[in-house]
Length: 77
Length: 155
Image (cartoon, rainbow over the protein chains, first blue to last red):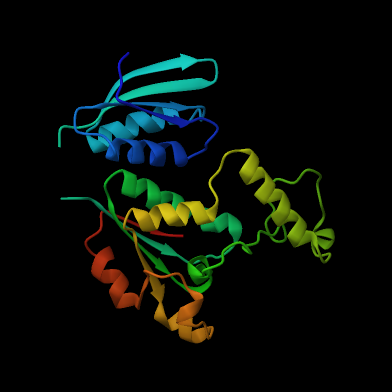
């Protein structure tokens, strides 16, 4: 899947993956896609909740062993 | 309009330092406008140096310990330092943020940090003991923001 920026939040615990995600998105133009990887099992629910509340779009979630990868499209404004 | 979160941070031990900074930094990431009012022992969390925050197993029966320990052993000098050291090690091993890191995240996100002026006077703290960028105020200052907040928590 295509993306415009990648952030590694592996081995970080709550709330750091969300904070890294927010920072990553703030460095992107609207409608661009952020790829972020995390190992915190809580991040699965947290990223859904984050996107629901902020209006960014969770395009896809992959799971490979302990690593979760999220693709998030930044909201248009 | 942005949602608002008002927190009161009243505790100054290493373990209780986490909830206000975790909630405030996360709420900021969720586009909330956030204020934390630091009162009594919570004021410790605004000091320039927070590396000496401690956690004690004494009077804290829920704290997980590697071996069960009766209260009178927890009173032995050095036990608090040992528990603090173990906790800090765990924090680092599990990828949990340090208090410094979470506090910086709050400041960068524009979380407003307010020190209770009464407590500053009560404990003879000096303004220069605290980090830059904070404000000093009283209960009325807290309510100015809390009264129009969506979420209010006392920690």
